[in-house]
Amino acid sequence: MQINRHDHDRRKVLLDRIRGTTVTIPNLRPIFEKYTGSVNPNYEAMIPVVNSRLESLVPNEKRLAKLKTADFALFASNWWPTAKFRELRTVAFLAIWLFLWDDALDEPTGEYADNFGAAQVYRAETEQFLADCLGLSTSTEISNVVTYPAFDSLKDFGVHLKKMVLEYFLGVSPETQTAKPSSGGFLRGVEVFGRKVKGAVRWTLGMKTEKKLFPPPSSHIIIESFRVIGDELKLAYTVEQRQNFFEDMKFYIATTETEQRYKLDGKIPTLEEYWEARMGTSAVAACLAMIELVHHIKGPYRSTNHPSLKTLSDESNIIVVITNDMLSLKKEIAQRQIDSLIPLSVPVYGGVQEAIDQAHIDLLASVARFDGEAEKILSKPNTTGMSNNELRIFVEGCRKCWVGNFNWSLCTGRYGLGAIDQKNGSFSVPL
Image 1 (cartoon, helix red, strand yellow):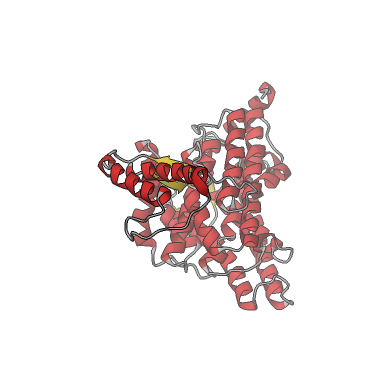
Image 2 (spheres, rainbow, N blue to C red):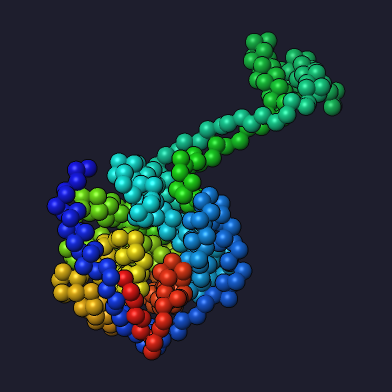
């Protein structure tokens, strides 16, 4: 990919314009506190499960310690406060998967951050693996493999071979000593005998035939870690629900390509271009599709992509993105990243504080649109295919997700806000 030096210089100028400033993030609590926000009662029990999962996926001790401070158990417990333990584990694993998968592309030290070709292979393998894990692939590859335990049963081979000879040449079963009918003459007997000798050898050596793992193990540990998530979704979801989730995941994967191109090309995207990509890279739609899992809603539903619910899903997405990009600003600038809402708004609104103030206005407007859309959905005829109760659960589930996201963002070590002095709910943030 060709590097545009002029564009890279423009990105540096924008970054330098932001760094060294101190801004105030306004008190956002009144927006969220009027809605009920709770933490899943399984939170404490989920912490060691999440930590164990991270330990199995991240060998670097320094990075592992940093990821543990993000508290993905709290993330899942805030987003899905009513989930039972098993479903909470699945959504927590999905959250981990999304963060780790994206970090490989998005973090400055990510293994594919500077290698677009390798990143494309990573994306392609991921999409195919997800389709296979969700039972949506057209592939029917099923083959047999052989495993070889210790050769400790050879002494039994003679006994087993004798049994085969008696049974297939003489028509006698050693156990019953009764004659068995002929099955087609000498040559047929030899053929059958050969197969049975092969079976005897396999049995004697402790060799067993088993279905090959499908999909085959991924070349990347993070991609492979989706398998357990896919297994749970295949049990819990109909084909239509899995297809809906997969469409959201494909959109997520595709938009990470757009975002990475901007970075590697040195391009500063317009706000319109940013939002087109960010609606996918946030992965909010895929997370909202988990509402059905945690509430055991099962049916031929499109939920996040249904025409009647798409606006609601999109507003949920916008609320999460604005909140995230305001509260993660310190982290992004510390990592010399400008590809988020506030930095990209600086040239438009004239300064960092002005960009933050505008984001606050936009957040209030999005919450108001969500509330209006929710009221409209629940008051008009239901065309979603869900029952009225299921529809209400989905609508309220969307709200719980963006309220929970805000509550988690204030606490997570990922954004580093815990050590910042808070006054009247506002944040004074040095960049």
